[in-house]
Image (cartoon, rainbow, N blue to C red; front, side, top):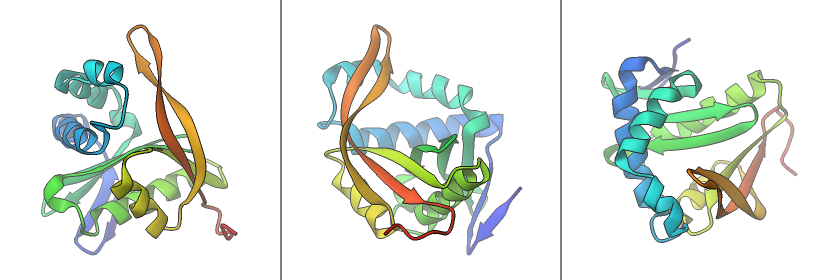
Length: 169
């Protein structure tokens, strides 16, 4: 399925997208996370780790395409919007809201009434974006990131949004 909103098209990722997804993911992850997460996690999130993870996650990934180029992506599993990243040159455009709307649609299609996502506590830019798009801060919690020696707790906020058409109030 290909969905279009203005100049932004979304479609399921294909294997050939993995390299671009990894590049966008790594750059955005560094922008939003460095200085706000445990050093233990920074040490294992190498550029190569994003290449591997992007290849493994193609089936969970939807990409946004602008002018024939991948401009961002979202990964959804069940009711969790796991990753939302936009290429630096496309930030502040319709790409992120389009991807977020598609993620909400996927969560709803997965049979869930509410979507959730984790935002690193110090990532103020992302937190404001989600709030502007109708998500509410459900409070702080430690997200369990996967490290080679086991889980790494990451201070985050859990954001939630009703996706079944009901009000968030």
